[in-house]
Amino acid sequence: MIVKKILKMLLMGISIVILIGSECPEPEPPETYDPDLPLEHIDELRDEYSTYSLTVPPRSAFSAGTRAYSANYQFWTADHLTCPTCPGICTYCRGTGLNTSDPYWAIIAILDWEVELGVKADQVNDELTSEWSGNVPIWITSAYRNPARNMRIPGHSPTSNHMFGHAIDFDGESPAENDMIRDAVSEAGGNPVPEGGGYGWIHANF
Image 1 (cartoon, helix red, strand yellow):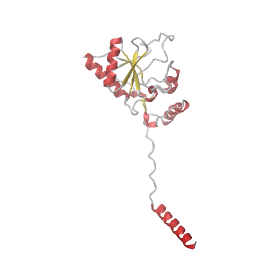
Image 2 (tube, helix red, strand yellow; image 1 turned 135 degrees about the horizontal axis):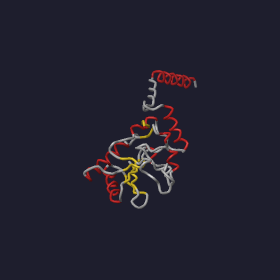
Image 3 (cartoon, helix red, strand yellow; image 1 turned 30 degrees about the vertical axis):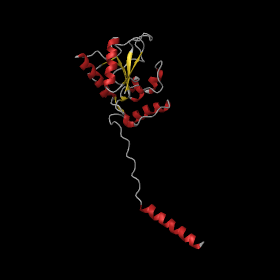
Image 4 (cartoon, helix red, strand yellow; image 1 turned 90 degrees about the vertical axis):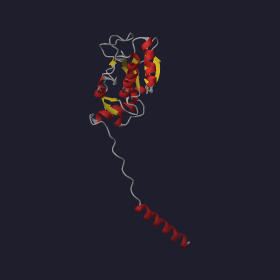
């Protein structure tokens, strides 16, 4: 019995020596975020994801909304888009660039989280320009959306890729143009989904 106690004490002592001699794990590096955005603004939008029980993007996923524009393609705006099912300008469909969120979130968007949304839009445009040998009248009707806006859109998907910066809606001006947009999206590595009936528009998942 005494021998067992001595062995137990020795083992405990060895364990203590090993524990003391081991290195402490390095602390986790602080999470990075866009310095052009106020941290409280980022976290307020992240709270919106929690409200709808969605995966909450990291702070680093959000970009300043001023980066949501490009000269390579056109955007639907209040001057261009009316919706046949809504009185006047459609507040659900109207967009101003790759950030098609509620106006409150005009300065913030997910543009580069696993998918570089602007790069993908440019690639689609480049494919079309190459195919049509000139400027293409391609319209972007929706890209990044904040969760609350997404949930208000009739027929929305509650897990839409638009909320995570992984989707863009492109619209041509004829069925033939949308067919070409569909092919261009595929060439750019996206998954094109025709929507809207008639010639409708092309929803592109990236």
